[in-house]
Length: 260
Image 1 (cartoon, helix red, strand yellow):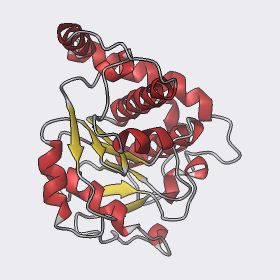
Image 2 (cartoon, one colour):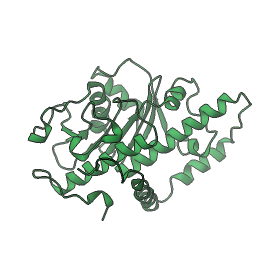
Image 3 (cartoon, helix red, strand yellow):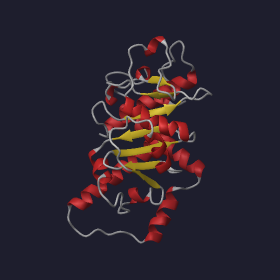
């Protein structure tokens, strides 16, 4: 059994939703552990199973390192809270809704969406050349990384169409002058994607700061490495799960239990 299921779901929440809530709360805490937060801003969302197209997002104002399963807010694709007694008093950030609802509406294959404003992510988002294939981490995204031009704070629902169009069929995107965005078929995959993309950006900022000429591998090497990352799907998903279970030990001993 997944270690995030030690606490039974509260009344009114079925086991499937509770598992997703626990996993998503754990992901919030892991993002905080790896210092990918921006105070109370940015968001991580997860789609719930079923025909209603509901998804979970953070209660605006709760810090990532203190996120609990019960803090997550269930909303529909119009941004309306799906009212239950547990939802009373919770709020959702408008810009977060705009970005995340765009992906959930258009990409049913991406169950989890992560958006960050890290220093390294913003720095690379502001560099004209974007992410360079100068590290093994970066080559994971070679040929499958999208870019979306900055349009201001994401309050205009019309921007959703352009976000989706720019993302295309990729799972990762750099939002110019803004930050990073990734999606995953599972919460475990989304964690893996944002971890690698963030580390690739950190490596690029560090390499550029040295002032020395960069070594960029030949195109065929970049393509070969990217293909190696896209190994057999079953092996890839098993690897994401193994890495996830290991990472969970990093957030097991918080002052409050993320599974509450």
